[in-house]
Amino acid sequence: MNKFAELNSANAAQLFADYCRAQGLNVSAVVQQADFAELYADSAQLPEIEAEFHRFIQQPSHPRYQAAAWQLSQPASVSGPALTAPDFAKLWQQAPLTLLMFALCLLVYLWQQLDWRGSSGALQLTEPAQLWRWFTPMLLHFSLTHIVFNLAWWFYLGRQLEQRLGAAVLINITLSAALVSNAAQYFLVGPNFGGMSGVVYALLGYCWLAGQLNPRQQLNISNGLAGFMLLWLLLGFMDVLWVSMANWAHLGGLLTGLVWAWLLRRKPGR
Image (tube, rainbow, N blue to C red; front, top):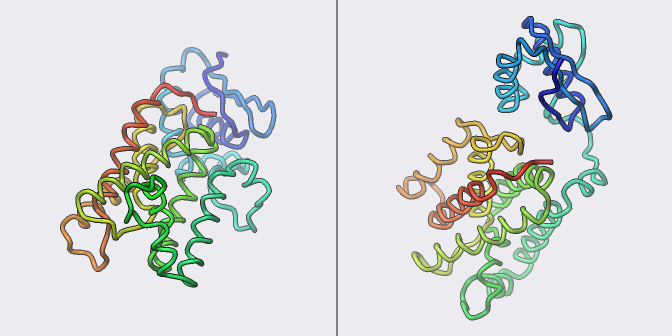
């Protein structure tokens, strides 16, 4: 038996091993602790097993793996959201930057409700000589739907990226995406815009391309979901939607995320 992979989830490793055994492949999971396990395989079957492992990394929550676990009478689950109250202490330990940005956007949104003119005047890109304004429009949101949509995506993508690559990588991507997306929207349209959607598109682009270039980072966005967000971007440029969108900010953010994914294509995930 040869070791061919390590996973940071004992449940995931056991789930993959169960699936392989159900397919007649000789795979064993050796659990060292809850967040670290090793996978061993029969050397004669290794090429086929590695191909299955690549499929598993791309879609670990696919029903075929859960079905195999049930067939072998071994309960297992991976990456599905639990129907329990969130453990904020654990979230803070794993992704403090994600939570801080989440809270900051909520506080700014509250400020907007209390003092619309003052908050917009302080944070919009109306005075380019004041350097902070090239970043602060990402904190502004102009409706409840706007902030809920953006923060849901931020929490989903930002938390994954911070856990896998660290807070330093997330802050670099966030700030560079904010700068590029805000500059694109400002120079091509004007200063009356706001929202984190440029940063969200950067994270989406990063996670999608990183999933293609370096599965070890375990940042995966399905082609269908990426296609939907790309369609949303195109519809925005066609001006057929019922909302006004900062389309150039979206495009600038997306391109920034793709560039970062290429630059970090050899960086291992945690």
